[in-house]
Image 1 (cartoon, rainbow, N blue to C red):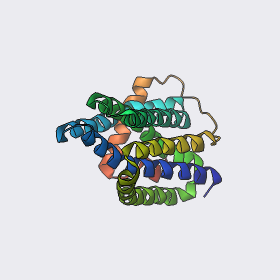
Image 2: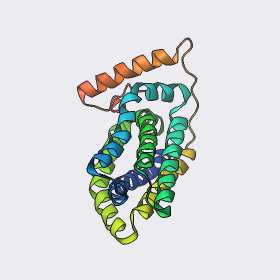
Image 3: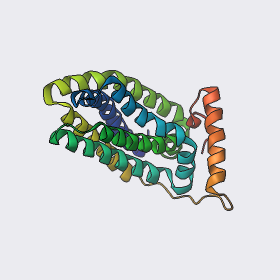
Image 4: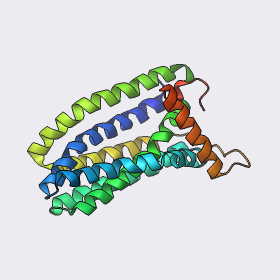
Length: 223
């Protein structure tokens, strides 16, 4: 694999592990702060809803302003949200509305990060190794989904949820560093195109990819 891909992949896996760990910590913190099961549901929904409603818009923004730049902004947003939550947890027991607000910000960051990931991979991985890159992403996702909650549970019991959420914030900082070290030529958007048109095309592409159950970067013709 190219050096750029290896560098990015290291930061990406680090942030995935931090996110998987913090899922347990946030749930623990919500309940420990007096929240109910329904309150925890609100927090979880606040993380997911932005990813659904911003999908087409986020993809169009990434195409127009550059994938790396958008991913950097998304990771900075998620890092800031988790750092703020960690600070609030260290200070005491945050109100439920703060959990919901920061979960919404994390979800917004995820909404902008994910659509740009496939396109960035095409730019930093050799075209004949895109299949291997996708396999590595799948391996990272599966491994962190198993190891993250288990490790997060142990760390919560030993250090408390605030420390685990702070570690997640640090993991996003690692991803920001990895992305900032990438050097990718900036491409100007096609002339005459508007953001609304890009959004419409992004929505059709996402629906097509979902219908066939494959990632856009798995096709050799992806750009």
